Image (cartoon, rainbow, N blue to C red; front, side, top):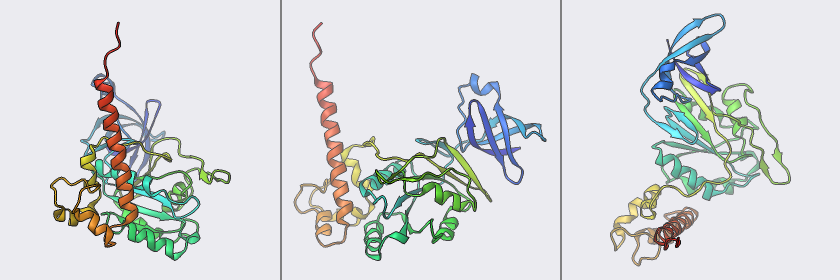
Amino acid sequence: MQGKIIKGIAGFYYVHVEDLGIYECKAKGAFRREGIKPLVGDNAEIEILDEEGRKGSMVALLPRKNALLRPAVANVDQSLVIFAMARPAPSLNLLDRFLIMMKQNGLPCIICFNKQDIADEAERSLLARTYEKCGCKVLFLSALKEEGVEELKELLRHRTTTVAGPSGVGKSSLVNLLQNGTVMETGDISKKAGRGRHTTRHSELLAMGNGTYIMDTPGFSSLGVFELEKEELAAFYPEFQPYEPDCRFQGCSHISEPDCGVKTALEQGLISAKRYENYRLLYEELKQRKREYRKAVTKDPVPR
């Protein structure tokens, strides 16, 4: 019998078998001897030991198509990045970092702006213009008023989706709506800080039926710089690509060079000023990291 690991706790793996339910399984000793670490999201072959008690033994893992480290999950089809339009206001620099992280993992991404009921049309229009050319589907909805939820459900159907975003944006409330019921614990917004208390405590896939799974992940307030060279960063801004052939210099960084096609497009309003500013800040961050690394490796050894 085959199913999908939806949770792992203290050596027990909970395997969801479509139309039958969840079985608590231990992995066979061969997994430990061969150094095989099952991940949430792995498709597994199990033997039923006790049908009434829903107990089983996991005997094999099917081949993975991918695996993420943060969160630790396998066989992901896409990512859903959720930010609020207000309370808290969206950090677009953090959003760009999420998009880069997802693209590094080869995952198509849906950007979801929640709480549209407390934002005005001008804010929505600005966010739409900012991200319309970034290569991602952009949705605006309200978990509180249940607006836009059905459209999102269609985008998730028959896929395994990892959900990410900072605390306080309504991720868990939205995930509960997608399941047509409250399964996850939700937290209140901290009135003093204007942020949410992180309420997701472990990685767990939630089965929505018809081969559809979602994983809510811990809230992030920051993401460190990536394993990237600064010269690679522009490839993560797809809206730059149509204008790069107009750059005078091959390998243009789009920062200080003259006759830069990207900066000309920026001046003409063809590229979002906010996206370009985030690019410039991340470029400088990567440049500084490399400078510090070189300084560290060339430092004279301490005399003995």
